[in-house]
Structures are given as C-alpha cells and as structure tokens.
Length: 347
Image (cartoon, rainbow, N blue to C red):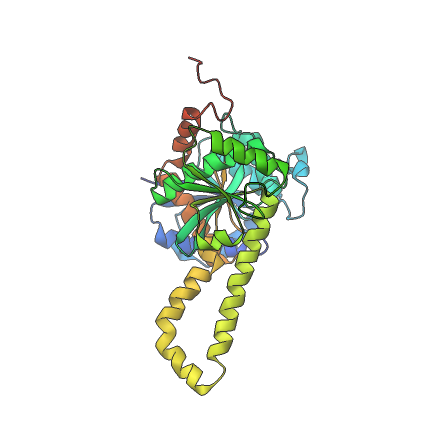
C-alpha cells in the first residue's frame, strides 16, 4: 500500500537542502512512500535533479511563501500566509490527500495551524510534542517537548493519557509506567499544579498506565518510567540538555582516543563498540516528535537537524501512518472519555 506524506520543504534552518536530501535517504528505506512536497519550485527543482532516486516519488506544489523560524504563530494564520508551504502541507492532510505532514519549521506556527486546520481530538485541550528518547533501559516517551510553555493540571493529565497510549503503540506495553517530572520524588515537592496533577493521575481508575509518582531529571536517562510527563518549557530544556550532553560525551571520547599512539591503537579494537555508542548518543537517531492530540498525524523535526535526522523523522511518520495510530488514539481517548470531560453517556 502506498503511503503519502505531505512535506513542508521550506521549514528548518538549512531548508530546503537538507529536506530534499533527507527525502532521498528516506525514499530508499521506504519504497512504498510518496511525497507531496510544498515549497518554492525555483529552489527545489535543482535539488531534486541531484537525487535521481526521487524521480517519480514526489509531487511538487509551488508555494511563494515560507514561514520563518521567528514568525509569531498568530501571523501564520493571517491572510498573507495562506499560501505558505507549511499551511498547504497541513491542508493536504485535512483534505485527505496525505496521511501525515512533516515539517522542521516554526514549532508555534505548526501547532497553531495544526489546531485550526486539523482540529483537536475531542476531549483534548492542547497538543503535546512527544518523542521516544534513549535511556539506560531502552527508550521512554517524553512529553511535552516544547509545544506548551505553561500547562495546568488538566493539560498534564491529558499528556499522561496520550503519552501512555503512545508508549503502548511504540513499545507494546499494555500498562506503561508514567512519571511526573518534578524537582524531587517526595509527594510534598513541587508547585500546586504538579501537586494537583499528581492527585488526578493517582486517583484515576482508568488511566491507561500505572502512575509511578514524581520523578527527577536523572530518572529520564535512567529509564525509571516508560512515560515522562512535563510542561513544554521544562521538556524542551531537558531535551536540549540531553542532546548537548550526548555531543559532549562523544567529543570527549574522540579526544581521549586521539591522545596518544596507544589510545589510537585501542580505538581500532574498540571501533565496533564505539560505533554503537555513537549511534545511541546521536540525537538525529531520535529526531521526529509527534503532536499528540491533533486530529491528524503531524510530525515535527528539529529545525537544526541535517538530512539524516530529517530522514529519521520521516521514518517516524511512516511508522505512525502504517500503524494507524491516529485512529487508535482517538478511540482510546473516547474510551477514557471521563478523564477528558467527555459525555460518555451520550448515544
């Protein structure tokens, strides 16, 4: 079965170059994938000519407008931006022309356009960016990674529910553990919103996972829980810190192996293990976060990624499309309607 992905080709720090290169990498990995590409044809056509593998695998729609990284989300909704590559890509999902949209562009604009065009899953107030991150035990789903700077207790409860459902989908666990990120694991720690959110999760009889209480920042890397719930401000700081530490460790290891002749010889024997370590620490491997809660699959790539990272984000989109995750999460939320304030007694 052919899967169709709508692509905002103009979003990201090094777009459209890394986008087209990333699509070429992804096209080789996913032979059943077709791309609806939206962007400026004068910039894109020469790039596509450099990648013969993409011949016949994409449909290009010319868009004069691109939403910049510093654009205010409200501006993305105005009339002058109606022909933007980001908006046209989202509209393709809304109209059923594509099963998902991917962009490395402005996060706020992507969320605002997604809410307006794709709407929200009934019962969800705000979308949250969720992504699996590497841990000592494998992977954990962390959300929100930057969509919502401020959240109330209801938002955090909804993130916990959606995160647990996402963990079920990714990891195949029927009862994933959920941790609420705090400055300490003791029940009295944290501000009032965290305290109330913890009470809601603790008292819920139909939470699609097991609430493990408060966890601290070092629990993320330890893999203490399958799901880590936090607001977008804290989540984004945690994500960027994790990526920075990964690059720091990689750089220090390389420097250590270059420090002398015996170190260089040792590196030759350690190369296979170092390659595996480098892959686990490489943030590009985990690029691609889904906006959970939108009425369509919307994947956000890091704006500063390269073509390999963008290709990995495309693979996230393919996994979500092929697994019919959007239908599953909408049904699961409906089944847990009491937690979302839905009328579960309605016919």
